[in-house]
Image (cartoon, rainbow, N blue to C red; front, side, top):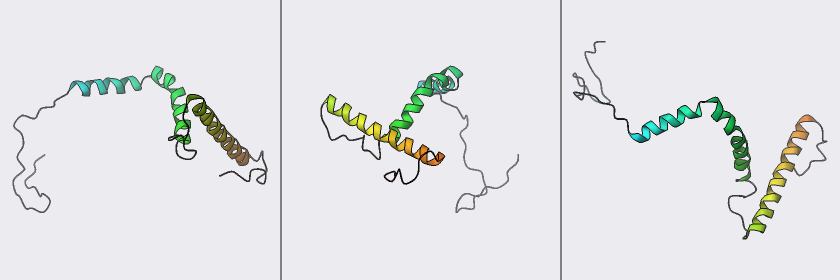
Length: 115
């Protein structure tokens, strides 16, 4: 490919921009580790092992904004467990009512409090 002129943004240069005499590619140890990790994540075994976690991560991300799981207003292990149990139960009821309404298994007037 033979290029006779270059136009850079807002200039009228006729010569190509200066290039490095010997272009080199530097690969660091971090780059190598990231490439190996991506290669591992493409394997069937990794995808099978990750299925359960990806399902739970979806529930966690759904719990954070609306019910306020990100910042609990209670202290102590038992109170935190109770709070999370009640918030998760409310999410399950919401999911059930959404599913039941979409399939017609529940009348809309039965589920007045759904959001």
